[in-house]
Image 1 (cartoon, chains in turn cyan, green):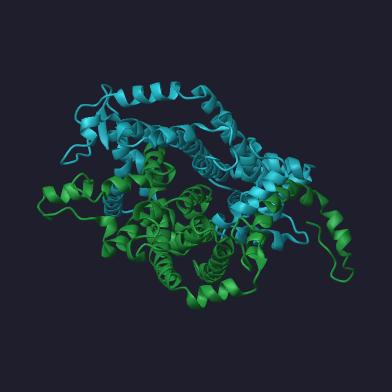
Image 2: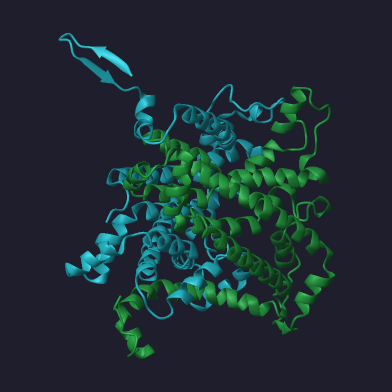
Length: 304
Length: 305
């Protein structure tokens, strides 16, 4: 603690950043030595985990000669934005204006993320909190579906999507995303933890099931659906839809950028810039969601 | 939830119509789930009983694919061995690491906590960030790892990491561990967030003395649903290791050292166009995962006892 003497006498105690960080824990069951040990452990593991991210950032800022330097260095010496300007030029020379790619990405990401969170949560609520025939079977089917290798279901999927006439539309990517197994499973697990008494009291107040779902359940599992949004965003970010979207006008940004990155050594600089851009977008989305999860800290968990 | 007297049990139809609001809420999801998941999986299971080269219509051959797979396919044995190694080594290790890191990160607050979460989740978040390992492991002097070791005089010649049989599997295991703090980890982070803080105060009064006791008696039992979720995601991830092997070691890899059940499946499905056989591999893998999951869920029920 830092003691600050004010002119009138009483001593004001200020906390350092470190003390603020561990404030609650020092009250309950936390030793100083344990904290130090965990700090050290996290530091080492963290460095290993973050190394490739550091390399992505540094590579994007390296001029071409540094990219092929021996011995290779992780950190950039003469940082330059050349790679990004080159990338910008390539993108603006593309067949389709590149704002169109951004628009496609926005549409696909928005609908598939929000849609999945909504549809899966709405189905997870009765599975977690209602009793009805078939409940166990439906839930088991979802878990089992997570264990089947997706590579062999692609052809049946293609047939179904063509049969529904969704081929070469955004819906070919969006609608299947709404029915992914992961969201239902995750949301059901979290909703199970909500005390029944909370739902009972909403019923006594005369709330219908949809209203209970919207005003009691969803706010209480906010960390869960924000986490699900992160999962879904990442899944869809990796899903470039080359199979279903044949028109260049419908393809997402990731697809166009990967095409540029595949240009070999001549485009190594641009590829490094693409690597950074393609990593930065999901990271930004992740940070937004994580900081919203932290805001729920003040409500301190689920109480009866 | 309507309480029913045990003696006059209503008919199934009556119970269903009483619960129609539940079914209505389930309907949109399960319609899409049936169309885009159940139907394709069922078709793949049917195709596993056929010879299907994707050009001609499938021909029914009964158990032929399974017999060939289990009795004659030597590479499948290697692939199976490697997959089980991934499942036994990376599965439990990364599950425990996910939990440990999430739990430690939960001790931190505010911005620092968000940053730490990002650091540990970063490998899974950045799409194909694992491709950076291609540059680290490049077999000539320009590879980071070779350059680093040459500089320190640990080695005299650059090592062809991904073309030398004995290095392939250990390297893939390290990369898979690095990559595997994904879904389970974030679910644990969110799960820790929703635990009622009053539980800890009550436990301290009841005599819980340190953070390890608190973890076992309070935290873990309170987040059992997340533990189960994490286990399923870990099983699906470690049994289905394939992308990193294909991208880093190639498919087929040198001496099939990096072969896994799924790379074997991809080999038959996308390269040899034997979709029936690939589907049989997928079905066998599916049954292995289902069995493992049964076992793991039984173990998890004992947590905190």
